[in-house]
Length: 347
Image (spheres, rainbow, N blue to C red):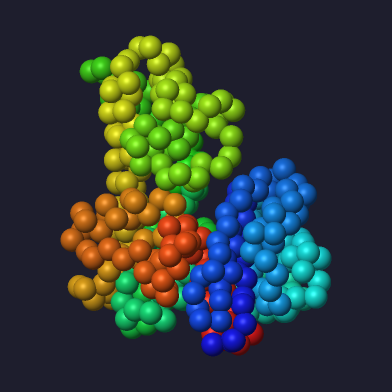
């Protein structure tokens, strides 16, 4: 152990997640803040200031990211460069290291020159941590926007994909999540009152509306404005869902809109389950390999484990108890993992 606190950062395109790890490996604090990074780096600066107030200072910091892909940047190389520079400017006196996947941790100047290894490597941080804890497992990290499915066998990460494109092709990355996914990305037509109704190709509703209607959306998971900028109530979600069908919510009862939301949930779950089956068909997993659930959508990972007859383990259960933040540790799994790896590797 390092004997000092480490803060891990996961810089996404829509959220900033951070975790403070104490010298005993216990997670002392976690924080998740909305960051519409596509609108400018000033949003990241504001969130970093807020996060530091919540976490308190530390001399050592470890960073992973996916935010380099937002359309604020002309390409991912530029995105990595700008995000690394932003962290270096915010933490000029800190011992700052950037996670570069299989290359380990790099100093900021080295990381800028190794952007392909740095870009979108947060899933590898999470899986690498799990591999230190378990002989065999499959990490199912379902967040607001994406789902990562990463096999671990013989205490090694067995993923075959190396970037977003290859990971999507291989089923290791499914671009679907429980908050920000537009409903038109889940289906092109839906069963409604005895008909198959085409969906409007408009950003009228998102998956957060679905899980608000099913009663499964975790508190605090939906941090960005709703699709219409309106209220985040069950009735408002039903109104947004109705618009996808080209009608008003008065066209059905609340019970009917809840049933349609449950249908969308099954569509999303089926996509993740199909990808999981593909990943498991390649990986050399033991029969006893559990599903490790992470992300705000890990309630779906629990359902997948039950369907496949697998033991479910929450990511937070792999760490020393942290009673006051335990509920949110798995929400910020990559930030926790990158802090742990940095502490253990002594960088």
